[in-house]
Length: 119
Image (cartoon, rainbow, N blue to C red; front, side, top):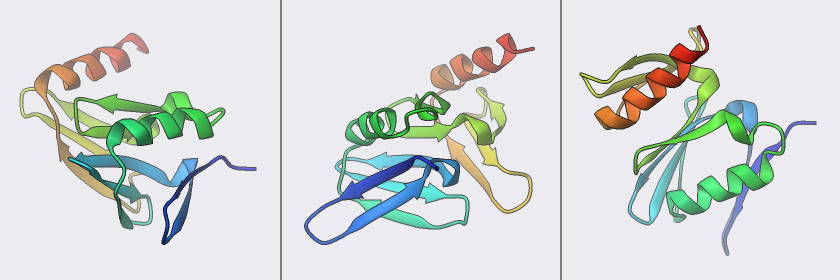
């Protein structure tokens, strides 16, 4: 059975399977959650709280999600391209979605080093 990120408030409940969550982007008190079917859900939860929920609710997959800088959490399985000089990261499954995002040079350098260690 898949782990789910479950978010709830007075009006709604959202359940997202771990393997479908591509990234979360934050703007203040709002966070946009992007899934592999190109859906975007906006929630009134700060990124830090979502980060805690991911690590709490995704029992086996919580370590696949990494916070990059102040405003992004990405699924490491979908990291396709990193260019710190251009401040660009691309998340893709090579078939159905391709998200090009901007992040800090420092955060992307660290992420690049992480993947280079695997070589």
